[in-house]
Image (cartoon, one colour):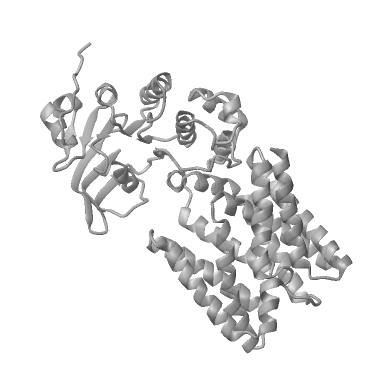
Amino acid sequence: MTIETLLLSITMAVAAGLVGSFAVMRRMGLAADPMSHVALPGIGIALALHINPLFGAVAMLLFGALLVWAVEGKARLGTEAIIGVLFSVALALGSMMTSGEELIDALFGGAGVLSWPEICFGLIASGAVVAFVVTQKNRLVVMLVSPDVARTAGIDVRRLDLLYLETFALTIALGLRFLGVLLMGALIIIPAATAKRLARNLTEMLVLAAGIAVVATVAGNWLAYSLHRETGPFIVIVAAACFLLSFLRR
Amino acid sequence: MLEVDRLSIRFGKVEVFTDLSFQVAKGKSLAVIGPNGAGKTALFHALIGSIASEGTIRWAPDVRIGYVPQKLDLDRDVPVTGTDFLRAHPTPARRADAEISRMLELVGISKEAGESSIGILSGGQFQRLLVAFALLGNPSVLLLDEPTAGVDGPGQKLLNELVRRLQEEQGLSVLFISHELSVVYRYATNVLCLGNRHACFGPPRKVLTPDLLSEIYGSTVDYHVHDH
């Protein structure tokens, strides 16, 4: 594994842990899974246009987050149903547009050397995700407790919600090459869920979630490299082992 | 401070209330009463702009609203402490540790309780934490949605007296929803009753006649005003 790849996987893991902390606290832990389906038609379109599939996936994920946000604002009831329909359609379109092998790569992460544009995108996007959570964590906490209280305290709740969803979508996109969209959901949720069991306050939660995600990513990479296997499943298994260990604590 | 003129709220085809008009002057308090489903909380949501309404809501231009919602649904194991929550207030000058300790003391929350997860605080403690958060914004008006529901006797007294003291010292205006008529009589300058057919507005002793109470609550309300 090259230094760039290691660096990229660590920043990606930090981003996943931080975003996941708020996803778990907001009880939207399962949203990563349907949301990730949106990446597929993007990959299909990008392949048809002969551009890097990663960028097609990113564009579609960001668009998907915008769509969820718009639906949330319009229809208070039935949001889940609409998201369910929307993302199943995305999965159907995506599988129509991509070949079997490309689909497997997108879902579970692909092998191969990362290109420089991919590395640059990964580092910048991870940096942006980390910066967003670190600078907005207080506002996100107030919104988590009560959007109405946040509104009266001068927080633009709708805007913050959109930014959070876009950050969440970007984080899923980050995992595309390493873990694939399906397993990226696990790296967002499992370390955060583990941290939630162990942490006593917000700082501990964020530090533990990011730390566990990094440990899972590095150890998973190392195990996969040693055993000559795909990295994604190993990362998820190490994260899940941390989660199980957290039950020993209390 | 606040002028509401012919305010109507509807959820889909259901009209919650129509043509509601009232005013709140600076430093005064308004109690909002009525049976469940009369639209008390919806009125507060309209006042803070979180739901759509028809009619006019006019706040004073420099108003700072502190809002204390009704019971919230939080995970018991959410790792956010009371101190974390207060420290998250977006007014930066208010985040100093000394200010947060002072505020916890003011609302009667111990240091230990302030360091525990907001998910395991009792209803009353959490309610007081929300009051502390609202006060950190240095509000000119407080909106309290059943602030003492689930709070024990001494806690209720502490909250009511705290609010009254802030009114006297800082000219705070207060709007509160309450089911306890004794509190309404004691603390409210005016009362707004939302009920089955018609709304009333005026000083409690004038407008809260037994007939009206039985009309808005739909049955006989056993209540006597004690003149001390």
